[in-house]
Amino acid sequence: MANIKSQIKRNRQNEKRRVRNRIFRGAARTSVKKARLALESGNTEEARAATMEAVSQLDQSAQKGTLHKRNAARRKGRLMKRLAAIEKKSE
Image 1 (cartoon, rainbow, N blue to C red):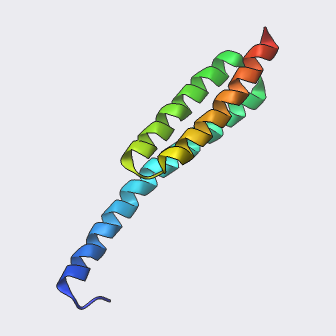
Image 2 (tube, helix red, strand yellow):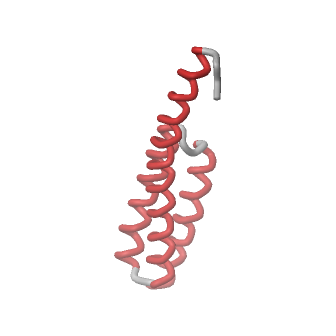
């Protein structure tokens, strides 16, 4: 336990941020997982909707600083690549 007043305050701030970041990170992970499952199912409409939701969540998480912007971009790129392959296959 910290004795210094500024460190006590810093610990409170860190805990608040940890909880807030966890919400955004968890939402991004959940939406990416749903998108992957939709992509595996092969239904293009469902896959497109789930992928767009995942992209939105990843953008939001990156904007809040929970995920690094390049990490979010890489994940979005992978999802979009898989979506494009499914859409091309279904034509």
